[in-house]
Amino acid sequence: MSISTAAITAVGSFSPVIFQVAVQAAPACSPQEPLTGLALPGNVPAAARTQATRAGNSVANPDVPLTRFSRQVSGGVRTIELTGRQTATAASAIPGSGCLLEVDVVVTGTPPNERVVGVEEIEEQLAIQNQSTLPTLPAAVRNRLRAEGFTAARFRVSFLERSRRYSPPQNFPSNAAIAPDGVVYEIEGTCTANNLPYCSAGQDGEAQISADGTTFLFESGS
Image (tube, rainbow, N blue to C red; front, side, top):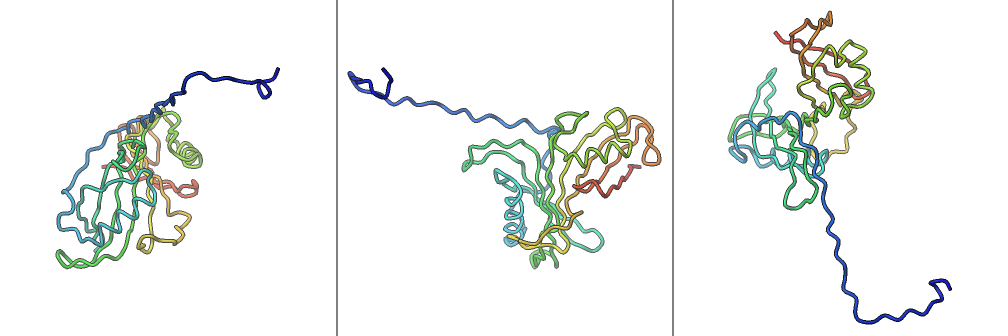
């Protein structure tokens, strides 16, 4: 007799069974970079902190609490760089990797009279999980890196970063489309063999490759 037509008599009462669902920890970020700079809020304008938080939350899940800051001036452009670590927060059960996140906000003027222009760049550190495959990079980026001679046998990667660059700077939330070459992967490392004309054995440098692999730039260290 099928179970659908069988008469079933239950004796006693049923107690609910509660299953514990374990949250799998995210892999630890490698390398573990320290957070540097001064503690927020410091003398950072509230508008700059708001813009940086919105921008960071638009790319990271779970949201990254920004806890440190520093100031830079390059080519006459003043920026406040706000940084945090991708870790779980009280409002999120999703663990973070421990990688860093940095949001650069362009400002004019000087403290305490700074005016926010907008977010210029969002930089996400990526974990180095395997030197041979670099799985956190898009295939187009990996292929271009190798095509330029930077194979695992000739270049040891020490730091990976995904950079979203906005020109002009954007206020968040922003619906502006980022330029095709606006997402750039920055790959720092050391040449373990000659790879001319880019670098010689023992020389440090950074490759910058657009997400689609069409643009390539290598800046060697001194």
